[in-house]
Length: 462
Image (cartoon, rainbow, N blue to C red; front, side, top):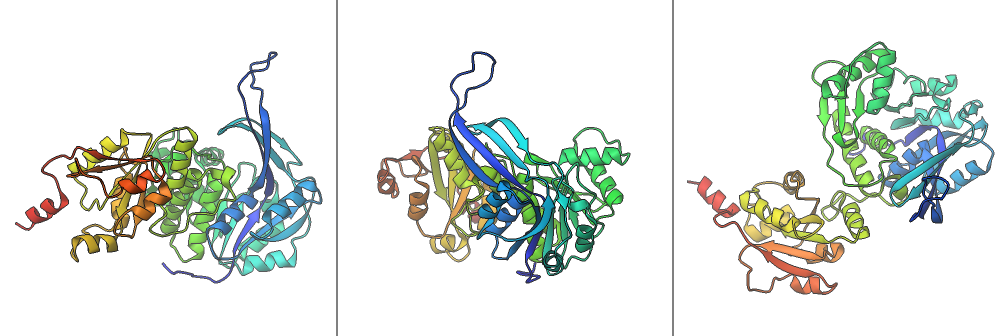
């Protein structure tokens, strides 16, 4: 994969919305109806629709992100401009009608009601020359269609047909069909079923066979390169219209706000294509990005920077810690090399998870393992060790650290319990003093005798 296939910007074309969350508490119902009384309300504004996709993309790349969107002359548009300032370059298309505003009343992590206002359709003026120029210069284009008529405009479609890079199209039930030049279209399961049914494809159910049949039908119907049907917690199914589809499973995420996950998916896919990825690689990156987005809090945490790639940041770990601590739970951590995962490891991990409400596993990086175990180790890379551990039901998150001891990563995570298995009974664990710094406790767990990676390696030499 090329590190930077095209030097142009990522251009997002579509409908920008203003999203407002009214977040409060509720402890009683109204006397006249079984509905909650929401009190202590805090108002939180954020970009929505194509604007959310643009800021999510901008937070995870050093590439310039340009948003081409209709903007009315009203207070909602002014609020959007203020929210986008300094994050993305805005190229407005003159539009009549009011800015679409979506207000969610939320109690904690749960929505009580959504109230929409503003004109459902934007009356577009001519596409500015600046907008057409940035689309032509784009390394990739993301079309974020929210059904307000932008993608049906003739001059917008003409500009997209001449885009300088691959086009990713995130469709809407009320929106226009993707242009045939689209490299990838990303409907969710319900959208794919609705369009396929309208095209005369009767594929019942939500099994992979039915989803695959709909994806193939949509490729023929739209004449596009590929369709990736997003399936929420199940990941995504990618079809090129023939042959076996590729299914990219998602890493399980507990809790989180799924609002905006589709925007995160499409933005990540477009960025990957801009950087030279093939379509399958782009979809795999998009599934991972959407899961991490939800784990960080979803659209509610839109202004939180995406975690930087590197050995210290475990995917989703901050979201796991926040959810457990917000609920008053206990965070448990354990650590080790976990080279060639065996039954002894699994027994220790299960026991550790039983001590609290989540388990974070801290694993030594490849360089750290070599320093500790010698030049022939590890046998399995850190990325693959992390994937295997994350697949265990008892593991909630994995963090890779590069030091010889986990002291720095423990100071960042600050777990309530640090659990180790092995021959430490009766001895003070090296990490115990670090845990005492914030009132944590280091404990020793029984170790399943007769199991070790070193013993497995030695036996394999016989």
